[in-house]
Every structure is written in structure tokens, then in C-alpha cells.
Amino acid sequence: MSQKAAAPGENQENCITLSEAMNRTNYWRQAVKHLYDNNQTKMPHGFFIPIADIIELSQLAQTYPEHDIVGVRAYFTFHKPQPIEPPYTEAITAILVPVHLSVNEATGNILPVAQELDLIVPIMPGAQNDPDPVVSVYDVTQPCPAVCDTSSFLF
Image (cartoon, rainbow, N blue to C red; front, side, top):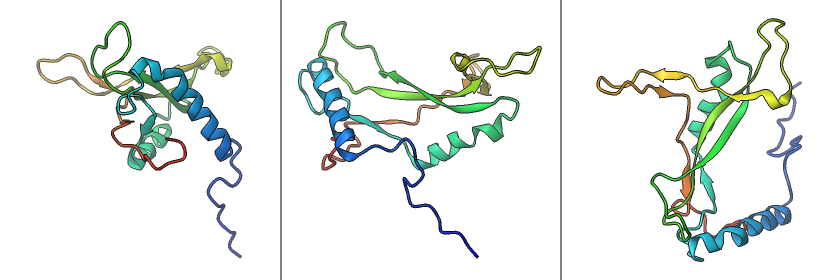
């Protein structure tokens, strides 16, 4: 007897209502709009992350079995320097880095939650004239605006 597959969002503790999502995205836009001179084409609304990159990030636990990878942390970025004072000239992007639990080397015990650490490890060596290796920091987001669904309730 086969079991029925769970519907999207079923058994998902972190799902919220559409009205809550709309409120939260509106609070964000209201808080930052002055930083972008009320320019909807510059003001950050969100990020698009391709599913292939989500799958790759989800497989990091198998890639680094020696680490207890528990998630991914997102850091906000700009691709180039911005003015000291708003309005800013480009949308925020994000970089993602795997996060692992810190383990006490002597006892093997997992340290408290505050010890969830970024796992930044070399992935590829640097180019011949560049000693800086490529590390486990993923630049997979695309900013919205640029790749937005302007018809979305959340835009």
C-alpha cells in the first residue's frame, strides 16, 4: 500500500499566511524605500535562487560528511561600492554559505546553538596568478528587482 505524498506546505511548521507575508514584505518596503529614493526599480524586494542551486546547497551534507551541516546563512551584498548616504544605486544581492555545528574536539559533543559556524572551505584553487582559492561561498541569488514577479501579492 503506497502512502499519499505530502502536499506542498503540508507538515511545514514554518509556512505563514498570505496576509502575514504581505504585511512583512510591506513593512520591509516601507522601511527601506527612502534608501532608494522611492525608486521601485532599485529598491530590493527579494532574491531569486534557481532550484538547481537550492539542490546543490542541500547536498552539502554529503559533500562534507566530516561537518554537521545544519543550514545555510545568507549575507547581504552589493556588487560594487555604494554612496555613503542614500539613495543607493543598485539592488541588494546575497551570498550563501553553509553552516555547521561546532563540535568540541575533545568530547565530540555539539556546542550550543550560538556555535553554528560558517563553513568556508576551499572548493577550487585560485588561478595561476591568483592565490585566492574559490571557497564554499555561493553567489547564486539574482536580485528582485531585475527578476521580479511584479504581479505577486508580495511585490
